[in-house]
Length: 381
Image 1 (cartoon, rainbow, N blue to C red):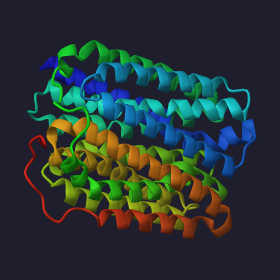
Image 2 (cartoon, rainbow, N blue to C red):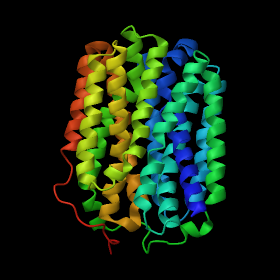
Image 3 (cartoon, helix red, strand yellow):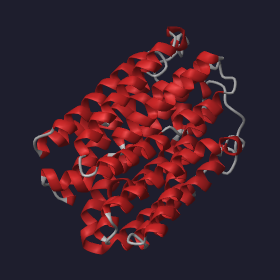
């Protein structure tokens, strides 16, 4: 039991580091990085898009190896996320910074499917849903930590990235120490899922793509629109901390959300995230309103990603790692499209129209939730 609890803690820390401190911290540090290294909003959008595509490629690798080589995925995650963070910290120009930011995103794409498999195997399917929800919600505490570090160090963003690298290394080594090789002993009969599995994922794939496009607005440009609207640097960083607090609250609400069918949870969480997105676009210069909007978005975003894991687990529990990787690939491709689109439209139509449109896409994603829910599925033959 102690090893399981320690593994959940280490896994939560790994997700916190690869997502909160690395993958999603680009937008947090964007105002300071762009000022020091000299690049514009459109360039930032292209960097974010490239990072999302690399994340997707890493998650595809997780799709292929999640069931059989989760420990290898953890090693690759700490190398890419940690190494990329060091590269950002030391970047002398925008080319090195862009390349490092792109590579660093791979860590999160590798870590998610690895932890789904490791946790599922460690708990032998018993109470693994709660453990998965806690590990997946690690993004929230990671964002809180990233925001507090930025608040303490701003404008010295380079030290913040070095701290992220050290945290990633420590969390990854802890997971490797606690995850037994036997946790990857069960191998599906077929490496690629059969056609019924793919047909069963058509609706969640479409939903993940739409939500990814809509979520890009807050992640990539939330702090930028606040600063442009007159918010102080400290107020904009605190709003980012509230995103993390909202995400961390998913852990506290896990006893309630785990009893909610994944489809219904998807509908609720995407609606809340969409509302937070629209509200931030409407009130970027109002610190209290912006903080509340960020907290709502944070809870909705993390809860929605957990609902995706639950959704694919309902379709086929034995291929949950593959399903998680596939849906997160689509999700981040959506974010890549969204980052580029928002970066191009924001200077033209402004934050209100852009963020309300992004929120509307989140609502559409939620409406794709299934209307009926089956019991946890057996492996598709």
